[in-house]
Image 1 (cartoon, one colour):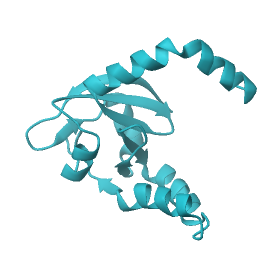
Image 2: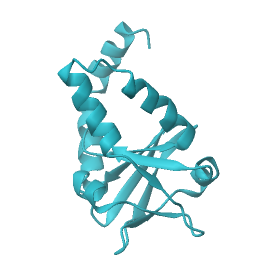
Image 3: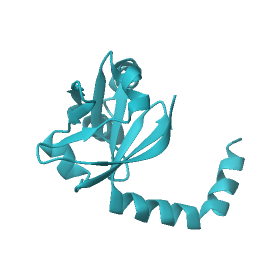
Image 4: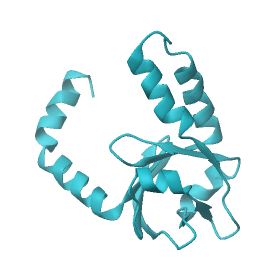
Length: 143
């Protein structure tokens, strides 16, 4: 289970350190892809395979299904984590998420998200301001 929020630096080679507590879970492989809200999603290989199967099974005749599958699948890249726990984030994904020098790695149960630190602060502030309304909508869903 991935939980927590961690601040790291993106180096000149496009590498970011994976938080120590997540490295063991990613040893068998990791995949990074375009996420939603202008961040990146990082999955274990096993979680990615489950998601990819679901995406591949979406109805081809529906434009939204094709668009979402393209966003997630075509943008995906397997990651190698080096001995220091760093992963190179491909340039096209860094550009998509507008990653600057400071990156936030956030654990969200079955995936990690990578955010530009300024964008994360902005998103988090807006979400926190709406937390009561969001909680009410989640209650309608049984959460």
